Length: 457
Ligand SMILES: [Zn+2]
Image (cartoon, rainbow, N blue to C red; front, side, top):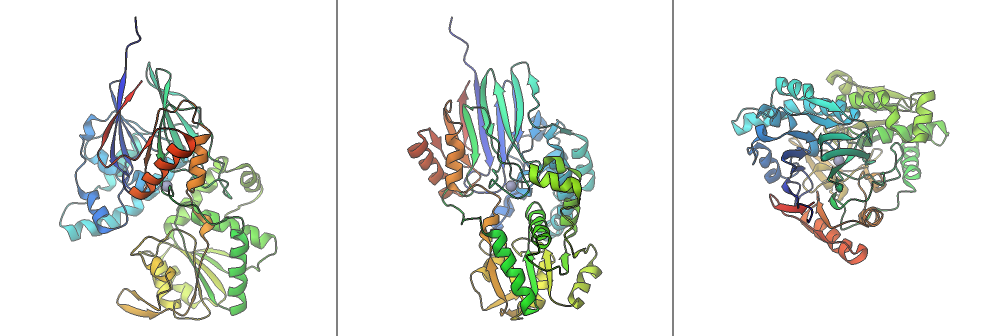
């Protein structure tokens, strides 16, 4: 008698045709499982989606698996809980710890947004507490049995501290959900792991249609910028994302100073969230790569010589009076908010100052306007002349470029029946799917939002 056929379904509730808002529903073995529950970010029409009710009943969900703690993968978890989800939330320990900080940091901004919209806030403090009470830690490679026939295992994705790929194993066939995939090798993290050969692959495609610049010289580039800052007796402003990029930059600065390539100078870490997240990195050095871990066992690799952390507003303002040369690391990474704004307002017109961009700058952000060479920028109500140097180091991207994504699939292709390219703009998703069909010889598609597909197990 033929083996009974089993079906599963994936519905792409977010991050299909866009980078942000990761939210995938897996219906398998009579379970309803979510992978990630993220915010939509970027343009207004994207952010509006955060305020639309879930397209499924949160009380019907059995479990939530979280790949990593970027807001576009976790941001709506407290809302899911507020709307009745009471199942377990699974992730690594750093993902849980950083997620809590992210929720607490976001609630105030969401409240402002809710007031403007005339609606109640997306979630309250009590929903964060409730979400944390449902959270369960799983180490990489442990097998979590959800039913007698369905288990889950996590692999290191090498994207941010604690990031994971989720492998669902149902009756011996595997579905791998990548989350975001790291730009391996990185200064702090382990390389993206090679999983067992999956049958189905749900993968990111942020850079599906393009590669990064060579990253070999990023530390040299950073050293040159600092040397110029010292020579010019100026201020170096580095807008930085609180998670991973900030800790990478602190580590690189530490290495440069230790090696004597740049002199010790005051380095202000002017971001309460980044300061707290750096504490989580200190707590979980076991999640770092071997070189960083070995160093971290002997001294504090995030406390570079000259580092001054500024948590309060007054401490932040006092940086204005501190003598040059100095370095200020402040959020937000794209300059669309955060303390970097007041530093940019003060220093953008100074020819001695430098603005160093170390991350992707989305369209319509202040960072992008600087990057495109604007002669003047509007900051709040002020129109500011741009006389400072504006420089970009692109090698710090946290995502795999197109060639690396293709290599990633090529290494695990032997059983693949279908690849779903998601978490990218439509053209990136489609370009990557085309490359995977042509160069790797796998069946690859780019699903659209809310599309539901059937998997045969
Ligand atoms: Zn991410």
